[in-house]
Length: 210
Length: 210
Length: 210
Image: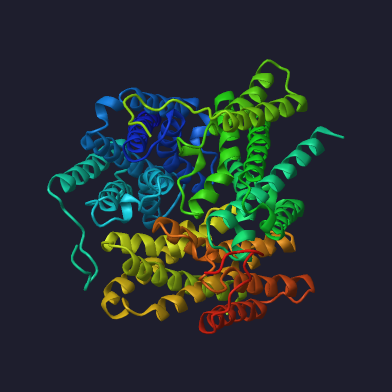
């Protein structure tokens, strides 16, 4: 399996996870019909990658390769038909979201490095790719985005760590697809651990208690 | 009249309809001054086309041809001065919105095909172009977008049908400006009929009653 | 000092002012942790310029030059550590916001002219660059954007005047960096005076009293 097809596979996995996440979040937090479920699944799934590719000055992969859209639609449809089973479970949504975040953060950073971006900018693009889809989801659902909320445990920090591993490996000349996988696993683990053990980032000095 | 100038005319009609729609929606749902009315009219009118052109990798038509901006400003200004008459009428807003949706869905799909996008992606870009301006309008007004709300009757589905006609005609080798007009009429009719007869898309299985 | 480096300096000043503004607004209006403060600072600071460069068809300056991101991070970090002192003061936030608005409006218009945009479109791009960052900030904080609110005094109008000075000077053949500075000062003055003397733009005819 070539590096290119490993990256495509991981990218499509991220699309599928975020499609499930976006569609289930829509079902859980708003009164949406089948169109709303599918639209929100597709936008959550493809939003981060579209932002990434527009900022890289490329035609978004979504519009060049039909597998992205089909994968996103499949995720949305699965969520729609399983909604009765999954509606009351917050955990699957959080795991799908963590998976999407992790895969997109490392792929965003990888693509930025391929396009000659500097290390700092590559990390930023990785984080933007990771948090972009979920942020659009929350804005459309009229909620404060997870990435900004002090009650959402760690969200941008795991993405930063995952993208950071990729960029660091590249900087010291070790760039390979295995560091992308390691970065994604690190991001996923830190996100899930922060949910499990209620880790929070520090509040500004003088912030009122909750 | 060449195909190009028919498309430009339809595009400007869509801009005008969405400018009226965005400006009247602003007046009706929020306390906005003349600047807010004009800004929201212009953004609703030009947002979908800007998204479309950025995703196509082009300088947005808005910035290449002054007629787009002047048309949008004219629509906003007309809404401002007619606001006393139109304030309490929901119907004109809905008709302008349906017209913008229809014209932008077929033009978005047409432009995507011209740029060599696949059929699925062309339909997606058509729908995005159609619903983009109104979605930005609703996000800026801090409302759940029409496209996601189960109480808004059919919205994305008419756009899907309109863009679908254009793409289908092109796929079977019948691409012509008349299919764009037919697609727009189909989209407009389905949208207006769904408002009139309160058609809704199905809710997810197990969704609570309204 | 070359024109290019004067523009870069002004651009970075705008980034710094908007980073302070976005971060302090986050601290003041929502319960955000250090990540939320930094993210909102960076997005407010870089959002307008990214929109500008994407619409110009360029790789955003943010991703080409690390000084943008470092400046934005520095502004966010300063706001975080000074939040106890600045939390209850609305005035500094408003001044930083006015500075960012002014600098970005004139730089956006200047870059649009350099890329051959027409005068009307250059003014539009200047206003979009100026109001873009703050609008994303408000959308993410789930507020009606300042640019749309009738209670926010003049906001888009100063940006329009500032961008207008630059475009007018260029149209009559006087384009120079000093007109950019003059435009920024005009924008800043009108914004601050409108806050001080509670100037408002007219409401639509027949609008209900506050």
